Amino acid sequence: MSNWFYSIMPRQENLRPIVAATLAMLATIGCSSRDDGPQRYRISGDVMYDGKPLPAGKIFFSPDTEAGNSGPGGYADIVDGHYDTNSGRAKGVVPGAQDVRVEGFDGQPSLKNDFHPKGNMLFPVFTDHIEVPESASEHHFDIPLNPK
Picture 1 (cartoon, rainbow, N blue to C red):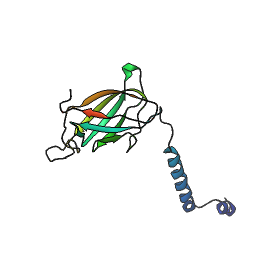
Picture 2 (picture 1 turned 135 degrees about the horizontal axis):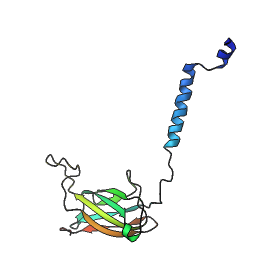
Picture 3 (picture 1 turned 90 degrees about the vertical axis):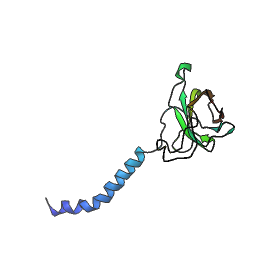
Picture 4 (picture 1 turned 120 degrees about the vertical axis):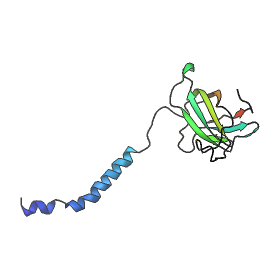
């Protein structure tokens, strides 16, 4: 080929920044926020155990399929008696009938319990049932000393 062809073609070392910028742009587009399912709504509230804020735990929301609800479940960490489904990696909860599970811990990790960093379980898993409206809402849970 003639020298003319090589003079108009970019050199390999000049292509590297262009290729890197193109790949970065494509990766950003692939990670952009998009609608990833049904509308979810923020739920927050307090969780009390034996009349005091639950030190640590996790709360899970599962659509009640027996009541005709469907969609992804939701969750949130419980910290000092409070939870919020829009904090951390949580995304909220679909509206409608929800089965709720609460795991409660004393918040004191120990060497004898390396299974869960939130400490020792205070009670067996507590369950409840709520209706989630099509808007942000608050739901409070009061877990007795000896839940059934």
